[in-house]
Image (cartoon, rainbow, N blue to C red; front, side, top):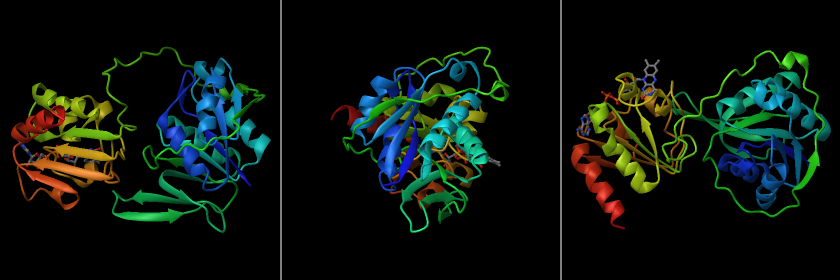
Length: 318
Ligand code: FAD
C-alpha cells in the first residue's frame, strides 16, 4: 500500500488534534507515515501509533526553533525523499500552508489548501474544498507529482486504529539558504484557558450587536459553559472590542467546528467565508430578516442580551 506522509503539529511532543484527524484521512488513501520535527518524538509516537501511524520519522535540530519554516521544509523534503509517498498531508494552519507550499515547489508538485474532505481516486487522492465564501464545493486533484494537501481542522473525527508507530531517525541537513529569517524573540500569548479558535469543537462568536467590549463577557460566559472558543466578526474587531486573533472570516480565521453560535452577527459574505463549513450553525439576532438566518440550522430571533444569558444558565444547569 502506498505511504502517505503526515506532518505532525505538536507542542513539545504533545500531538494536536488536527494531526489525528489527518491520520484518519490519510488511511483512506494509504498507510500513514508521520513526520515529527522537534523534541519528544517517542512520546508523540505513542499517540500517533494509536491513530494509525505505521512509522514515525523523527528529527530534531536547533534550526527548527531558531528560524522560520524553511529548516522544517528541508526536513519534510528529506522525509519525502526517503519515502516517495503518494501524498503529503499537513494541517491548514499558517505554518502548515507555508511548509506545504514550499515543499510542493521543491518537489515539482501541486498543493491543495483548506481541504475539508479527502478520498481515494483512480488517478490519485481527491480533495474537497469549500470555495468562494462557501458558495461552491469543489473536488480537485493534483495532476503532477505527489499531491501536497492541507486540511482544515475539524474536517474528520479522529479514529483510533492501532499501528506500529516505529520511530526512525531522519537525517536532516539544514541548508544555509534556509537560514534567511531568524526568530529574534517569542512572546507567548496570555492563555485564556479556552481552546484554540481554529481547532475548537464549539465556537461562540459575537458581532456588532454585542455593542461594546464591556459586553463581550456575555459571549465568553456562554463559551465557557460549553468549553468553546470565542470568535468575533470584523465589525467587533475593528471597533476594538475583541482581539484580531479572534476574528472569523475572509480576512480572519477560518473555522469548521461541530457547533458555531453567532450572536449579533448579520451574516455578511466575508463572515460566512470563515464559518460556513461548520457542522451545525445557530444564530441569535433580533432582526428576523438578517442574512445569517439563510444558512443556519437553528435560529433564534431575539435580543442577545436576553437569549445568551438564558442559554448560558440552561447549559450550566445540565
Ligand atoms: P453588522 O453587519 O452590523 O450586524 C450586526 C447584527 O447584529 C445585525 O444583524 C443586527 O440585527 C444584530 N443585532 C444588533 N443588536 C442586537 C441584539 N441586541 N441582539 C441580537 N442581535 C442584534 N467580516 C467578518 O466578520 N470577518 C472577516 O474576515 C471580514 N473580512 C472582510 C474583508 C473585506 C475585504 C471586506 C470588504 C469586509 C470584510 N468583513 C469581514 C466585513 C463584513 O462585510 C461585515 O461588515 C461584517 O461581517 C459585519 O459584522 P457584524 O455582522 O458583526 O455587523
